[in-house]
Length: 195
Length: 195
Image 1 (cartoon, rainbow over the protein chains, first blue to last red):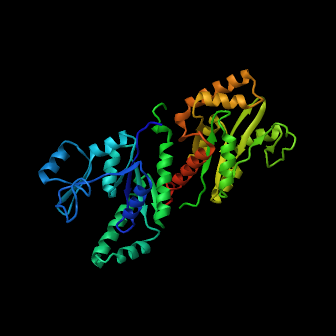
Image 2 (image 1 turned 30 degrees about the vertical axis):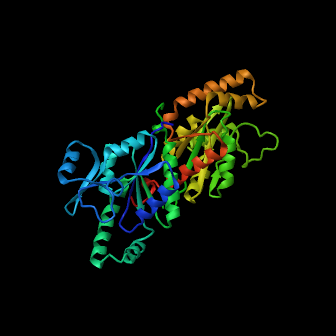
Image 3 (image 1 turned 135 degrees about the vertical axis):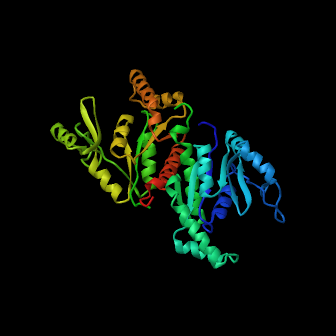
């Protein structure tokens, strides 16, 4: 084995259950760590710097972009969000797997920087199921939900640029599939140094 | 899901334990079937046509080659061996996975015919371990063993043309890795028809 960890990017539409699947994955494996995003938005109550997010000023964030210290970044509603490169690369070189929960555009940026990254798209059993999951979120207005569903459809169009598609019919099934993907990826011949 | 089964080719040096791993895999999955080879060698005592092998005359075998009815074939010590195409293709289209235990040259021939095939190379934890496993086989003379080890080294050189490399440290570990590979391959986006 090469000893290098695997970077796994998990994307999927809002409401598909990325959070629940990520938590279950992280809870079941001691070798898997979660990447912490950098952001310029202000910390919310209870959010700790370096735990929920790394908080930066816009000026600091722009410097990180210029220095190519981010694996991917985007501006959302006037705030910057991104993935600090050093944390991910250190964990991978220590042989730990890294989980990154970002959107498809971010995932494709990461793949350009780290071609060995494994891109997994989590999708719902059906559109109706996604709609019903979004409806259960008290915070979602119908207009907001429609926007999210449209966005989900846009993301689905880019599915073929992802490596794997995992149906989240049940959290434990999705977790088992992603664990299988990690195990299989570790056996891929091109990851072996002496090939 | 596409509904199409996966063809998994298992190769590896003599003595690595392909037989034990195959039996365990087949025993644990009802969706996995083993491909039966065609041969021109005479049946040994107890061998049943269509179960151990499909037995053919040299003339019949040559006809199958000409008609491209074999996924791969080779002549070994004056006898022909090959994999009948129809059995494999029927099982795959019925959604069953097919296990094919053949050598690396055969595996590469299969990949040319069926690019979606998954090539897995089973290798021993070490050369010393392989040697000791071969020594335990009462039938192996030292000269025969040396020949097999040389052949194993030749095969290892082609490892990079295989998709996966699985260490057979323990049968149950190898089986778990191959099951993960099958599960992961079913999630690959390019296998989805609508991508």
